[in-house]
Image (cartoon, rainbow, N blue to C red):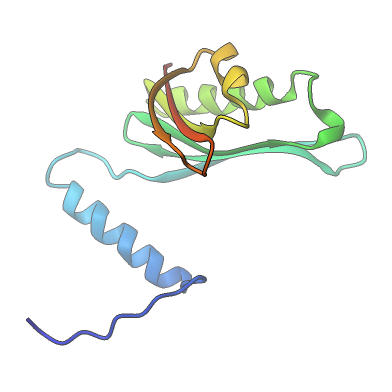
Length: 140
C-alpha cells in the first residue's frame, strides 16, 4: 500500500469538499442520467426583515433531502414551519422529486413531521444517549 498523508479537519477547505462531491457525481453518472446534490433552500423574513425561519436541503435525483428546518422561537406554533416545508417540497416536485426524507431526534420534532405527512422508517437508538435519531420519509 502507498504511503498517504491523512489529515483530520473540523473546517475543511470548501474546494476539497467540492472535489469529494464531484468525484461521487462522476462515479454515479455511469449509473444515473443526471447529477445529484443540487442545493435548495427556502427562507422567511419577518416584517422587520429579520430571519424568522428557513429550510435547507438538497435535491438528489428524484429525492429531496431536508437537512435543516428552523423557526425562531417568536414565530413558532403559527404554521411557519409547515409553510416552509410545503414550499421546499413544492420546489423539489417542480425539479422532478417524487420523495422526501429527513431526520430528527426524539426530543425534537417527530410529531411536527408526522403531522406534515412524514413517517418513520428507521431509528438509531441511544443517539444521543437516552434518545433516538429518527429517519422519516414522505412521497411527494
